[in-house]
Image (cartoon, rainbow, N blue to C red; front, side, top):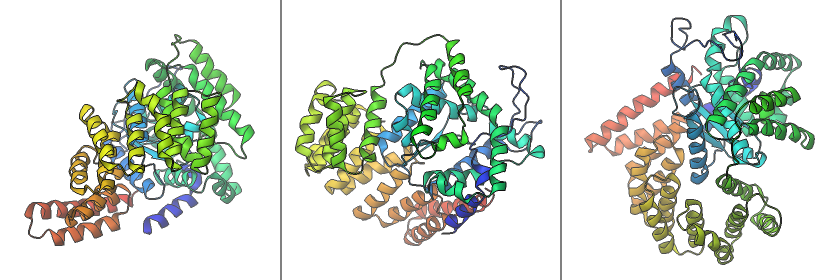
Length: 489
């Protein structure tokens, strides 16, 4: 509860944080390609170390999760993580380990937070028409991180009012929950003027992020023109919506910015058009969920399959998902089968077929199908979670527990893994395991009081198990330190 109250306080200070990572430049550009960046923790800044920045980013993410509904779709999470990792390999980012949070919200927004946190609203998929456009937004956010705009803003703090991590939390929580209308209505004239000043002051950061982002896009073999196209999509959205997308509030787009992006892209080598089918499959998943009812989603994808669509495979896939959700698994099999005939090992199609099996309560087929897929691709997060979930629904709790315990060691920072593991431990009869897994879930979601409560229960129950007892006691000490650190945000 205290976390929610603290977040409410952050939201009241919305102005300072609504700029995400855009902030004043400490270094002066000597031409477009000669920007001198101070290093966090070096003799020129000495303000905060890289390790401290990483720690603050992790803490920010925990507190953000405590307030915002994030996606539990493992396939979607895997796609966004892979997309960001692929781009990061071609970006100037020194530390390429990124924490990714997918926000279950149909507004168009993406953000980057110091310490290597990148967030994506599911609504971004609804606006970006192809994979390159989607990637252009991710590349832009990676550019904010690689150019260390937050760190450079700390250098300039003696001359300006700065956005803070707490303010960022308030702004982004508001964007992902109540939406921007409430925040804008609550602003006083003074706050609005301060926000306008901050936006003007951050234009250099945005220009730099545009340049670095477009270069990253091109190096990754994607179309650099996609950045300008995406900007146009954003600008177009302002004509059809009551208020602009959240992304535009923090990354203002003008005709000049679009022209600059296109001019920069024109100077680069052209790349052949890429197949965006994988992107369209993920987009179909989100579009099914975005419809008011599964029945409406069925009608939409039926119409697309008969008429105009961006990808016939994606339209068919979306229809199969919608039919399954609408309680028509037998029809969904007929819809999905042509895709499975072409690509029987495709993870998206295997998972969709397993979901049909589960809807028909054919648990043996679902678990067998997914086990074969995991055997072929043992490191696939989505397939592993699908298999664990299938065993869970089949009542095979020990099998699900075995899979999830192993997977939790690989994905220690994934709340969805710990949540399902806690449920599985409970039904498998491992009560100490329940408390340990729930504590980890609450830690990742910034709810430290509940984490400590579960750890205390676990310590009491594990008094005769020296190793587990010691591990849980140490974890309690870790959480108490996290609570203290959280106060510094």
